[in-house]
Amino acid sequence: MTAKTLAIGNYNDTDAAALEHDLDAKRVSSLDEALALDDAAREAVTAIAYMGHAAFGGDAMDAFPNLGLIANFGVGYDAIDVDAASARDIALTNTPDVLNDDVADLAVAMLLMQGRRMRQGDELVRSGRWADGESFPLNRKMSGAKVGILGLGRIGHDIANRLAAFKMDLHYWSRSEKDTPGWTYHADPMDLARAVDVLVIALVGGPETENMVNAAMLDALGKDGVVINISRGTTVDEGALLDALEAGRIAGAGLDVFVGEPKVDPRFYKLDQVVLQPHQGSGTVETRAAMGQLQRDNVAAFHEGKPLLTRVN
Amino acid sequence: MTAKTLAIGNYNDTDAAALEHDLDAKRVSSLDEALALDDAAREAVTAIAYMGHAAFGGDAMDAFPNLGLIANFGVGYDAIDVDAASARDIALTNTPDVLNDDVADLAVAMLLMQGRRMRQGDELVRSGRWADGESFPLNRKMSGAKVGILGLGRIGHDIANRLAAFKMDLHYWSRSEKDTPGWTYHADPMDLARAVDVLVIALVGGPETENMVNAAMLDALGKDGVVINISRGTTVDEGALLDALEAGRIAGAGLDVFVGEPKVDPRFYKLDQVVLQPHQGSGTVETRAAMGQLQRDNVAAFHEGKPLLTRVN
View 1 (cartoon, each protein chain N blue to C red):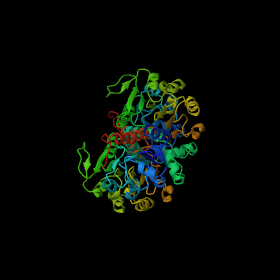
View 2: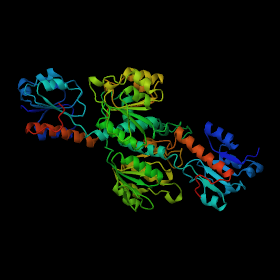
View 3: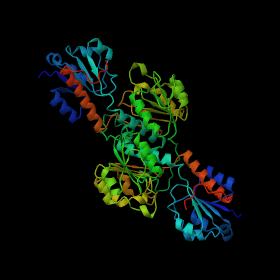
View 4: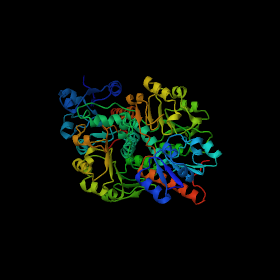
């Protein structure tokens, strides 16, 4: 069988069935497995539905000489070499917007859970220690906090909209000043870090933002500062973050993303003041279904010669 | 020493110092200890600064023949017999409003933490199981959920305002319909439970609301339903709640309050789908300081013959 659509990645049963049924897709679990297909199979492929974080560069694209589309599952496509795709006239699509709500929900939830020490509160009750008379220390008020959004794209904006309902004093950095309702713009990310107590990272991934949150920015955030990251692990100098947390130079963190995930640096495991999440930002049944549908809609549009829904190059 | 102000309860160091310095208060740790004071000490007392959940009834009030004020630390004063106080011309004050933000923050945080299974997510990462390849199941989208607020007082309103920023479909029950922006009023609490997936209990405590959330209401909420309670443990038939949770007749809960707390029913400890918190609704440094100040301001106003700031009877 020589399918024109190749689905790469670990799709759930619903998406796998839809890829096969709606698009007659051939499925493989990894890019390596795709590259090991025989010549006829690779030559037949005109569209790839991609799910994964393995680097997808020009050499891999060249293994599919008739490839015209890579439809990425997810809003972040930093695993895919966009310039290499463009140079080969390969269109790239992603799945934006449909996941914004979930990611923003998780960012706010990590912020509150970290500040109110809710993992520790649950453990105090669940262990029976509260019943035995142990008291819970007072925490930090979160409503009204000074929060900085690093990267005011669509997700950053959705996070800020939620935090506004908690009466937070909102600051942001973005490449350009936005038309925002009373939020304070900082042209320099360091100024943002100095101005706030909670720094929420909502940057895009990729080389331009790599290690943007570094030791100096963490020092600017200060000892009462908390870092929330729902973007990409690469946006933070993770060694500097671990050093700052271990030394108490910042107060805590809420992290859904890590460098080299899921191989998390074990130094994180011992940090009581950090909320750790397994990259579940978009991890709801409803949103993953919407992402899968949007990915397939892009592939279908490509095969039918219609405009792509969410092209990025 | 015969102080006219008696402070009852376990105050933190800051509040204890302020009670002694600002009000020349005598301090005891419990109502029992207060009742054991000698006649002269009890007769000197005209104002009691009360902190605690031990029942404060008419007999205890009669032990202080010159008592004119009970200034409660906390917004909920269900431990104090209001009718008995009124019958004795004893004024009662509480500390409303200053804690609304914290309680509302915790309600929203429990809702998100329960729905996105964030305790379990943290545990998956922290244990190293995620690094070892174990995946995290998809959860439930929270933004856009149908939420019912049971009791739309000031705290209920503050919770609803926050949830509106999560694009939730808001429903409520209250004794009377309020002027609300597009929220759906239900005159019958059972209709509210039927209409929503998440039921947030923001009732006042006391006999009128005891066991208001009973087995029938939990059944009306249904198997996808989640109960969030930041009010008083007494508002829920806890046995019925445990039965429903254990049998999967509702999906989960987030509970900051319990019947007989801190002696939590150990059946709760085993429930994975429940977020348990040690009654920390108002438990932040900032808010407890504001509550202590408001309590002392009421006592000072009483002694100076000025209008009480937050009288409830």
